Length: 414
Ligand SMILES: [Zn+2]
Image 1: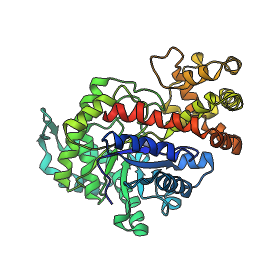
Image 2 (image 1 turned 120 degrees about the horizontal axis):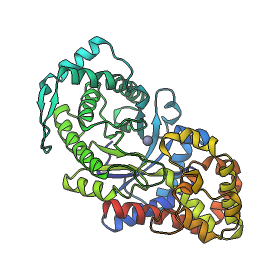
Image 3 (image 1 turned 135 degrees about the vertical axis):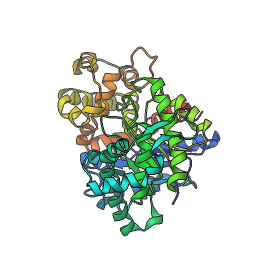
Image 4 (image 1 turned 45 degrees about the vertical axis):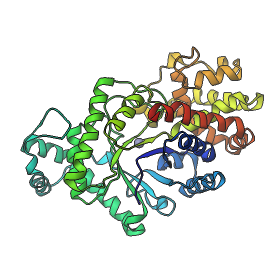
């Protein structure tokens, strides 16, 4: 199996918006942009919602059938490792091998020596075609990079081979992710990470590094845009060179996690992938649930009432909800409206405060981030929440489609 040039990680917490998401992909196709949809859901999300990977497969298959989609599509076991992969084996055909936790774990001296031996042709001045400055590579550089990433590459290989044992080599797309860490990986680190992955027999088709800057959940990119642009461009060139040097899959491409809402860097990524004729995968699944709440706020009094109670409960349980996401949110508590204030809002005010339209005077990124991590509360409402989504499927779905197509796809690929 091979993933095509452009792919988009959709998927959603409650697995109801499959059709609304696919409609955005179809709109793109009608506009001449070919995108493969990938429904992704992580083990963490399944645990919080109490859903099963098989449910994601059903969502994707049903959406594809209902809308007559004839293109490729995948179901991504997002952020799995050896201890969590099992229950995804049957329903997934895309696996995100998350080895972030293994970065920095020590490898043996023999393994480091072997890594240096395998990469000794790059000692001295390493020139990557397209990058105008050479990288200085010494044995110490290789020792340091090997020491940091070799264990993680071996772990990726263990997970990969485990999946191959169960499914065979041709039945899934392997992604390797290292994004959930504090420190960004540099392009030169990326080059030797790809070397290590190739050495350990992991034919990654997508790779998710930690990029420079903050990729907070549901809000715009925060960081040095010029530095990001330089790093992203060099990553593309490194990937191009690595494919040839290490015989990695020719469609290998970058995967951008927490990729929704990073509007400040969309035009940069869009221009660079076009300039170098490269593909990209962008994961945006977390955002869909915010659009559900916007839809409910606009759907009339009973639905707005539910949206408000979800916020009120979330506001009261802020620390509990934010805990697991502490490194990927920046909520300014003094910007948050109290539950009583929100009680007096109409649907438009709620929707405009939540919707990611930066020029709008009501838009409040702290409010948006708190709700982003508050899907646990909606899950606790159980069928009361999901029945409301089904009852107001029209207006809710419209928000979901518009968000993916107008605010995301058009900005990135337009
Ligand atoms: Zn991720």
